[in-house]
Amino acid sequence: MQPLANITPLTPATNSGSIKISNVGQVFTTSSQTVVALEDVSLEVKPGRFVVLVGPSGCGKSTLLMMMAGLRQQTSGSVLIDGRPITRPDPDRVGVVFQEASLFPWLTAEENVEFPLMLRGTPKTERRAKSQDALKLVGLDGFGKRHPHELSGGMKQRVSIARGLVQNPPVLLMDEPFAALDEQTRMTMGDELLRIWAATEKTVVFVTHSLTEAVYLADEVLVMSARPGRIVDRLQVMLPRPRTYDMLSGDAFSSLRDRIWQHIRKSA
Amino acid sequence: MAVVAAFFLLWEALSVTGIVNARLLPSASETLRTLFDLLQRANVLYALGVTGSEVMLAFVLAVPVAAMIGLLIAENRYVSDVLRPLLFFAFSIPKSIFLPMFILVFGVGFAQKVSFGFFSTIFIVIMSTTAAVESVKVEYLTVARSYGATPMQTAFRVYLPSMLPVLLESLRIAMIFNLTGVLLAEMYASREGIGHMIANWGENFQMKQLLAGVVLISVIAIIFNELVRWIETRCSHWRT
Image 1 (cartoon, rainbow over the protein chains, first blue to last red):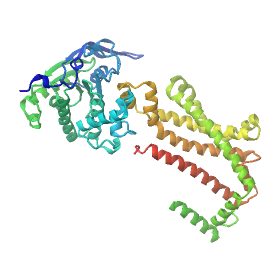
Image 2 (image 1 turned 120 degrees about the vertical axis):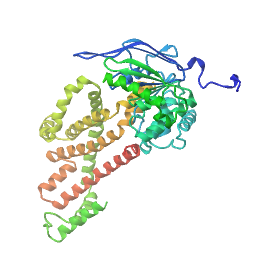
Image 3 (image 1 turned 30 degrees about the vertical axis):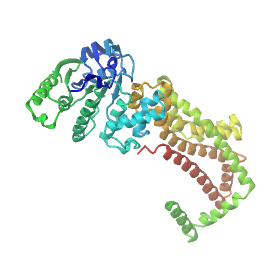
């Protein structure tokens, strides 16, 4: 067994990536009506956990994610990351990976990855070094000079992940990142993401429509219902890691997936 | 290139074989000879200079002004609601209807040509600037925001590069409108300029000179067009 002193944590303990959401509500008011998008949502994510949010369309799972990213303000309640409230985007604490084509097509892959660093004026050589590391981590070593239109859908999402990780934030938020990919690429990207997650020990909050993807990736699945959006179930996925393709056909896997499906059918 | 060569060959053939009367359609070779002849003449060069400066001045005035108005329309709901219908109206009627008004206000001369060129150009630039702003994807803005971009960074690092291909394309089209506007103003009422000369040749049925003038103008327009297109391909190789 290795002595503890030799293990240097990837991120400082004070910046470890815990998330605490307490009694969060979100109300939209239009001229004709008031819509309750989220009602009394509370959840807690321990550092380094992989949590997946699932639910029918319009259940507010993306809204909830955008609140954690500081891109949207809740009407009530609080969102804390590492004990401090998130009121606006804070790239030191949170990296975001968006749905499909969010890369800037006029920049190369490495320039896209460096974009967050460029915004804060990091010197070019340091930027380049970090983007090379991040691209290597996501398995795109040597693809830095390509433009997004020269990359496949899966590769583009790898670049997006690299961009989310380049500043080494403790939390990675992912908003349906693989939704636009075909089934096979999607499975591969799931495995890749788990590998990257294991290597970086990030806290991941992942939003998806796919129940299989949810159970396959997660430590914990939070199931949401629509109108008003609230959390109706929390499932601990006790399947061992690394996850493998055979588990998909196992009883444990299907019973978890069925349980989520029951909730969603009721809600829809 | 092959198309251009084929066009000139066909033209030459039609005229030389007499399928079309050579008085009506002088041959391509003869037209080109006339063109070179014209380019030696001081009054033609002077006219070119006059027209050129009118076109350039109208262009450099119209583009920034129109781009500003376009930005305002794209960014401000109120300005948009007020100006959009007016613009659409102004865009869809032939501008030459208003030429007499320009003569009344500016007299016949340099200012009238420039102002009419300006007037002919702004609508297309306003509309394409608005389109360019709207072509910027919301996703790009969200990404910039989530990584803490300041408004200036968003303007220069997201809006500008994203809009550039559409903007450059609009410059090309704007120049066509601008050139057409100035030439039209010159042909309508003028004492100098290449448009005036062409109108004169036309009225006297000097077909050789008329066609030479047409070729000259197209060559100038094509050169400008290709220049902007060259910049365009350099800046927007990422657009497929």
